[in-house]
Length: 374
Image (cartoon, rainbow, N blue to C red):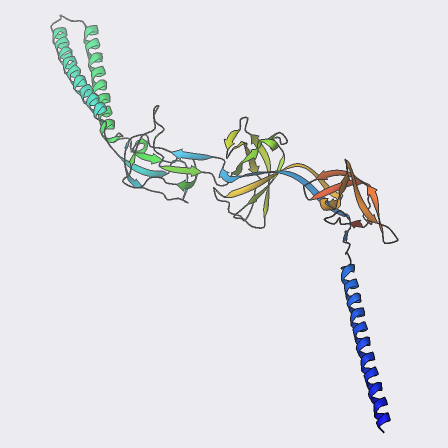
């Protein structure tokens, strides 16, 4: 009995030892397998794309704004105080419509001269009247001829006209207009063109200065034709040599989302200006007629000037093209699932998509190069 128990004990110890050894060997084997799998890493996924037909348009972008082609600054013809404004921004006016009224401030020097001219003309008229009366009396006595009387009468009429002119000049100096000609009054500021009032920079009660040879005068209102808008922007000197008058322009207005407007380049400045450290040239483009869209003066806009274009060309994303020196090539999938190098001839590019002239067909599959060039 005791020997049987000893044999059972030895067998139990042997089994436990065997299980322990198997467990250690199994754990070691699993560890080796796990490390081997980790060392293999994740399989590299190969991405591919196909050539496609696309419209490739190369543009030079000009930044600017929309402005009216005709914008007129209405200025007063006399200095004074704005008595009343008859329009507000946004109003539509016709040529000759009343814009504002000005209360004139007489110029002291001009007023003094006008008053002196009136007094002098009055004195001359009195002398002419005396001479006319004297010549008539002498003619009645037979001591003066009729021709002398006619000369005195003519001189009298001239002096009357001089007095009238001097009086009118005095009235203009005081009031800015003649009472008999209110329509042409200098104190009435009228629209010189038909259009929309864009701005009225002055307020009622503000002082204004007349427009003359030495001063451009105070702007009372700005009138523009809002039915004829143009794009005015600036192009960098690097692109100005690539554009020409008459080129097609695609205009995108910031305030009008989801819509582009067509136009044509009208003018390119002959001289550039330094803007933020770079030479910029001003360009103007005419906007084609548009319907159902309100374009306001001052809207910011970008104009894409079409330098060259290909419609329906076989194209690839530029990221698919690789270079060996100056030779462009792509990697094309073959029947075995591998890839082979194929040289290609390239055409126009817009910076994202490039035209393929030779070397590919629409049925080819092109490998997307990895960051390491694999």
